[in-house]
Image (cartoon, rainbow, N blue to C red; front, side, top):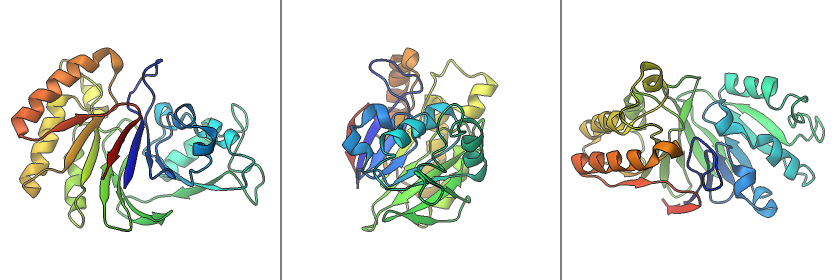
Length: 260
């Protein structure tokens, strides 16, 4: 499994992009920077997009991806929680701010075919099996375990606050070889509303300790979704977590390529 980190940040700048990952060139996990990161030819190879939740930094490029590939005759399967898909229809793919690509180029052959997911119920798309698992966040959200035909497996949590450990037991049937986990804020940013929505390095350590207690060892771990203003501080604090747990925690970067 070939994983490309397209966007690894919460805020966009000339050197940072919004959240999006690409598996083997044709399965996208979130859509914050699909158009900005990919050539027209690469955008045209995407066959499915899986959304963790509704927030703009994870969905922004759905209209531009739709426009870029509208003439290629290929429908893209768009997966997400029912409320996530409904919010997209109401606020982003609404036919007002952007074209409604759930009905264009035509209702018979739209750019996006909406596919609701149900937590804990596996589904298949473009050769992968995915398991959605509910995670704590300020909007309804799910993580995804993605498994390819050879049994290689990754976990992408999207955004998650404290309580991420609630999904660890759901991984027992197939443990991931790689976990891509969010760490948005530094430890000093511990307001209750932030703790519910996002992890700090200290909060991540507590969640990972629960994983270690359950399974005895860790897979490869990569942290992502940093706020650029706090990234240097977050990196230093993640190094402390890595030393405390005895596990390497990689730092996601734009255009990083990982083999799972």
